[in-house]
Image (tube, rainbow, N blue to C red):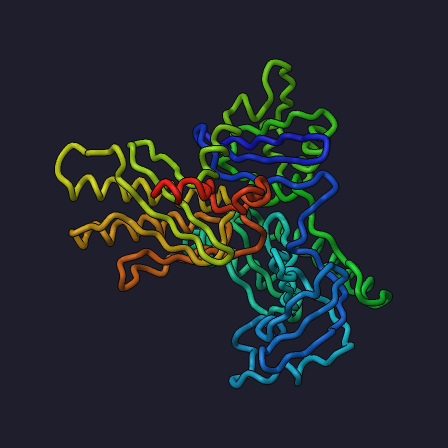
Amino acid sequence: MKEILVHVGRQTIETAVMADGRLIEYDIEEAAGGKLAGNLYLGRVENVLPGMQAAFVNIGLARNAFLYIDDVLHPHLERQPKKKPSIAELLRPGQELIVQIAKEPHGGKGARVTTHYTLPGRYLVYMPHADYVAVSKKVADDRERDRLKEAGELIRQGEEGIILRTAAEGESCERLREDVEFLRELWREIEAKAAGAAAPCELHRDAGLMYRLVRDTLDAGTNRIWIDNAAAHEELRALIGSMAPSKLDCVSLYDSREKGLFEQHGVRAQLEQAYGREIRLPSGGSLVWDQTEALTVIDVNTGRYVGTTDLEETVFATNIEAAEEIARLLRLRDTGGIILIDFIDMGDERHRTQVAERLEMLARQDRTACHVLGWTRLGLMEMTRKKVRRDATLRLYEPCAACGGRGVVYAGAGRMRDGG
């Protein structure tokens, strides 16, 4: 059973997606809108650095945005030159151009931007200059994939590009055409605004959290949507009525005064457990989760789990369970970058293959681009997951002022004197 929960606070909106009572996705956003990824700006090139094949673009934020040459070249690989030119041949200081935030600013780094523009709709992603049609890998049926690709070719114009999303499965060509016409008109408005503006300025802000929830998360498998604010309940019904009218009956207002919506469904307790350094597995094993800015390392331990047959089977069962929990937590924590998993050593090569295949299958279900690269020579499982925003843990928690986020307590000089 899949349920979507929406908690509207005074300053924030929180959403949680539950599958059979387990939390699988969580997001939080300021009610006024705090998300930057997906926003479009008219920027001004400040510096061009041929040695880095990159440029820094002023888009009006505290730090200039980083624009790499691959994000300046044509979005269709077949349309790119065989020999990559110098960035200085493509951009010059003072030049104005439309850019879109692909990765939000973090720490001392500015945002990463691109000229490969994407405007997501309910059924498809519109790309004004990509010149190709693609279908979501989650659409498994070959005939349906062919039908959608054919429909995409019919409804696109000129050099437009289209990616048909999973929600497009089974939808009519006319419904897809309505989606692309809306997004095409939106892009024309963005271009018109840019033509009459002076850089740096914001041209388009991506939709708020509730809109994205309906657009990206609501699907045929959703059984119930709970929201705990009457005004927001009407707004949500209006959104669903226009985008997925068949799901209107799923929407309910939660108005209990005894217990909050998230507390009633155990969201807070599950967040506390999921965002800890050590995460217990149902069998008694555990995960130890350590994270830096670019790298996440996950260690799998058997813990109290002793199995019922032999050591190899115990290890295999723990690793399979760990793979499933890791896939869930990557989505829940919105972890991005390089991920290394130290599974417990397995002697049976078939078991190693099965663990890798299970992880790959779960990664394909992730809405964020996620790739399992396989076993390293040291026996670690290597993965990557697209990094768009700060890890959800960092959006909810601040590093401890005493230890600077290292999670240790200073023993003090007295312990050293005592021979500690």
